Length: 180
Image (cartoon, rainbow, N blue to C red; front, side, top):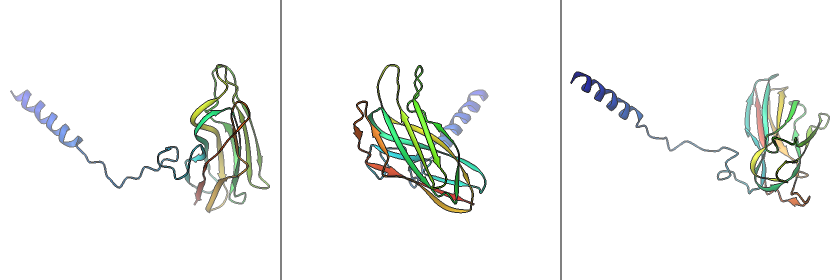
């Protein structure tokens, strides 16, 4: 009997302690959630869209495409403030990764003018395109000065289907970097 009362007390404690209300003031603003972005898709966006960094430290930003159908290639130009940020590394994202065939991935960092050009092309072993949401590139920046700067997509960005027809980019999700 003592064992049953002890078990019952533990069970009641667990039930009561697990009944927590989810605060209604929580804001779900994930820039990769197509339901909460304030622009149309397909779109290019950054994740995270807001970064806090220490001066002289590195941070990562992913370039994502959202809600695209039959994507075979992309050209992305990302502008950054060359006085506040420096590109440390650019690597291929995961959207075009194939188990057999490596995608084409080429980038150019023009630190004199403050932009990065990223060219990607899908060379899948069992299909000619991908659809959905995914990372095109990962960029490691170094924060040079304290203050706020932006990462913005240029209007020259382009997405194409397997026949090299343009896919309209209907939205851009830019980024903000706050360095302390």
